[in-house]
Structure formats: C-alpha cells, structure tokens
Length: 310
Image 1 (cartoon, rainbow, N blue to C red):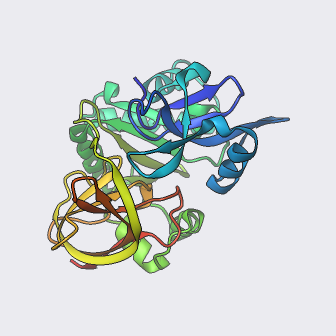
Image 2: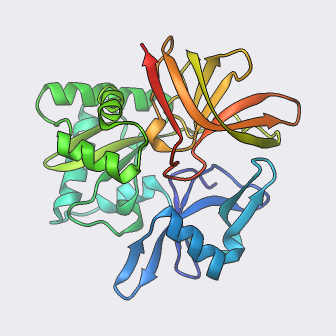
Image 3: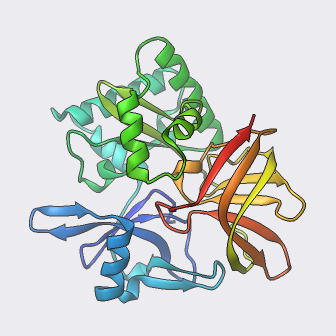
C-alpha cells in the first residue's frame, strides 16, 4: 500500500515523494524530488522536475481524468524501492549515530513518547527518509492518525512552554516563507503559522509535524473539471480535516461548499467560525457539485487561503 509521505525510487534512480494514497489507473501519484548526479542525489524544484520529466521521462506523466490535470505518476513495475516513514524512523534510530541531526531526531522522538505519544504512530519523511539530509536539513516527522497528531500538537505546545523545545525565530520563519513562495505577506503568513503548533526547533534544527491518516474513506471517485481561477470569501463550518492530505475546509457559501488544499502551506490554516478568503481553481463535478482547489503545483503561486475575520 502506497501512502502519502512515502518515497519511491525508480530503476532510473529518480526519487519521488508519494502524494496520494493508493493507485490511480494503476499508477502511484507522486512528485519528483531528487535526481542522481555525480555526488549522489540532488533535490530539484517542481519547475525543474516538470521540465525534466517532459523532456526525458514522459512515461512518468499521467493525465488524471478524475482531476482534469496532468500529474506525475509512477507505474509500480518501474519502482525499485519503496521507503515508508515508519521504516525510515526505525532505521535512523537503530544504532547510535554521531550525526547531529540524527541525534536531534532521536531526542525529539523521545520527548514526544515521554509526553504520551505511541512510538508506532511516528515516522520520518523528507530528506531523512530519502537519505539526503545535511546538517542544516529540517526534520519532517510523520504522525499517523488524527488522534495521535492532535496529541503531538498539544505535546509540542507543552514542551515549548517547558523550554525543552523552541519556537522558530523570525529569521527561520522568513526563510520558510520565502522558500514556499507564499503570496501572503510575511506578517499574514507568520500570524497563521504561529498558532498551528505543528512546527518547532530542537537544538537548532527546525522540525515539522506531518499528519498521515490511515483507514480513511476512499477519495471522491467523481470526475472534476476545472472552470478557471476564482477568489471567494466564506465562513468555515468544519475544519476537522484541516491538517489532512489534502486539507479540507467545509464552507458556508451559497455555491461552493468545499475547499481543498494540496499544498502544505495551507494545512491547519483556518478554524471553525472564521471567515476566509480563498484563491484557487474552481472545479465542477460531473453531477454539478462545486469546490475550490488550492495547490495546482507544489508552490501554488497566487493561490492561497487566509483568515480575514476570526
């Protein structure tokens, strides 16, 4: 079973991050993140990845009828290795390692377990799963299950209050904001991020908590067609899946009752009762239902969700 936040390595040596659970039309929906070079693996952005695949590896491009968009996808027969976050965490912690980032990962894991989080609910993704981390890499800690994820967020809040963890500095927040290419102002971005408690710093290394849900209902099987870019304002009526993948916000809106975000910037972005402005793609299903989708690419330029009244 392929899940979001897993990594897959092809026989070509390309490393993809899985973005959607399961298979679509017999393929794993995933984004190209690392390519081989003379020194091992090199991380690439979404623009370079798209250019490389269209030029040299078009068999990893897939038109999704259900989503009305061309996605990156890998047939299982081309997968040489499947890496999962649980296995990745166990491998990194299996033996003492002098690497400072591994030591910080071990310390963070120990702190969360001490706060009541089950070890089996944790994993690691990103560069630590792919084996490409550096001293200044972030720690992308996966938490399996909504209940454990909320427990982890509360634990982060307590650990920061005890001075066992730190909140990111303004310079760290600004670096993250610039890297994501977020269309919100830095002040807007910071206000939203500081209340999520899914990020922190341990001994100088930034970490993120990432929710992976298991045993959830299957993805909406309907076919959706893009109608164009729109910006709407509405009140959030349900944000219980706001940290999911994709993040879901039910809206009190006369025509568009649902917003989805496929980019991590806007997970946990709004709470029930808050009024939001959303800029993204208007989609209509085959049975006439409507929704707005944020995250047409990983960076999603010009697309956003922001609270305008809380």
